[in-house]
Image (tube, rainbow, N blue to C red; front, side, top):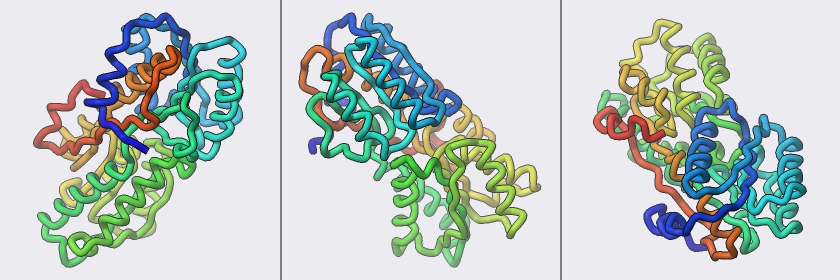
Length: 313
């Protein structure tokens, strides 16, 4: 399975001429900050290409998302884009689109059967083996710099357990913490926030009620990191004593970094993924060949380079 970076694969897709197609899009949940950024990236690229786009909110409901896909098919769209509610539901959606002969692009959240996608279906997103790895390694370095190499505690705030991204990011973190350089970090607990700030705040509050403040909090996304930060501050914890990491480099995340609360995040290019999804959908609708997997690279963001990412997500 050949994988290409945005600089190569998406550059080719972006060069395609305008195509007056109609694209149906099912987004996992409009309440999710990053998913909203993806949606805006899709809408902007569709407008740029002169394509019609209909976006629906699946509201974290697998059945609703499948119904939306079926409705897109019935309405005669030229291509479908999906950010999955549940990774394991991808085959049913894939089969529906294949049966109808309509191209399908999975964006951001990997389908479980990615290796077996038909030629008319592709994935545009980022390589999740990089995201948690980048985050965890930087957290490890920061803890060492704080003199914690003799022993440190950490909590992991996971995203949705039905999303491959959350599982892989958590696995990345655990693998880094198992290395000789970072095995001084012991994970006290890990639980899901479902990607949500409020849930993460409640989760962190419960952890603080049960025991002492950790040396680090590693979150699967910025929204969860911010929720943890809010709980830590509400409990009188000095953020200078806790290393908090996130993923996405959202504007809220960058503001938390500017305030000195978020120590590290990892830029996930919402515009690149959303726009790349539309480019792939249009190319497939025109009968053009598109690589099965198009990866948009993750990038480390720290206070030293945070200003470079303002406005990017």
